Amino acid sequence: MRTWFLAVVVAFVSQSQAAMSAASGENVNYTVRGQAYEGYYVSPGKNAPLVLMIHDWDGLTDYEVKRANMLADMGYAVFAADLFGAGVRPTEVTDKRQHTGELYQDREKMRELMLGALDAAKTLGADTANAVAMGYCFGGAAVLELARSGADLKGFATFHGGLQTPEGQDYAATKGEILVMHGSADTAITMDQFATLTNELEQAGVKHQMVTYGGAPHAFTVFGGDRYREDADRKSWALFSDFLTEKLR
Image (cartoon, rainbow, N blue to C red; front, side, top):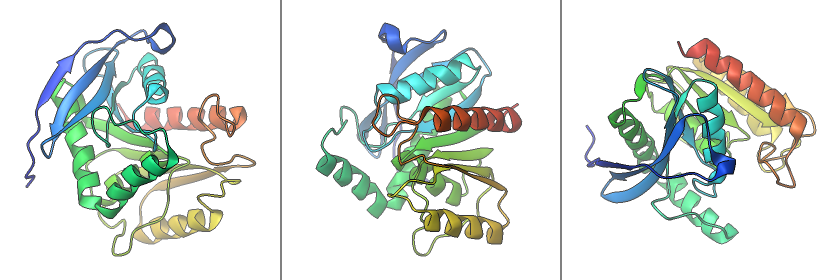
């Protein structure tokens, strides 16, 4: 039973022209464990399947908003969760490590924050019974944490996400299929970790797809970054689109 209180206050906000979608997006203020968080919600219409999006170690930024709008244009509702707190969008590496490190050390809180985001999405009318979770980098590691928790979602997808399983955890409770999209030139998350996760999922009997992109480094999907790789981004997005089509009705 959850011991935290969740309250949702929704405020419609104007988006910059670059981030605008055909659907109307909104910033969402909500509370988990008594702390304020600010997510982003966009939906093309009633009864749209839901994608829960988890940000990378920068926090919820324009990057996630752009990806959310891309998905909305494809027919999906998206709730981009905030795992750091309202207004917390770290720009220095030390701060990014601090905020992600705190959650890596408190896995129960990490899980509660994602479940709280799902509750916030449900309050907005999202169909949380017809949903997939996805994440980038740190968000990918968080999504795998959600999968291990036994969350009743139809799938879990990671883009260049952390792959290591914490000591004492496994995938025995996982309910949805797992899709991992990984750059084989990623020096932060090695191919040894990729192989280990493959073995863990196979042993647990979890349906999964594990895909690598040659020459793609960590963060290969981040537009405008030094490590952006257009080919790997295009192919992984197409694979994820197919995954959504298969999993969400």
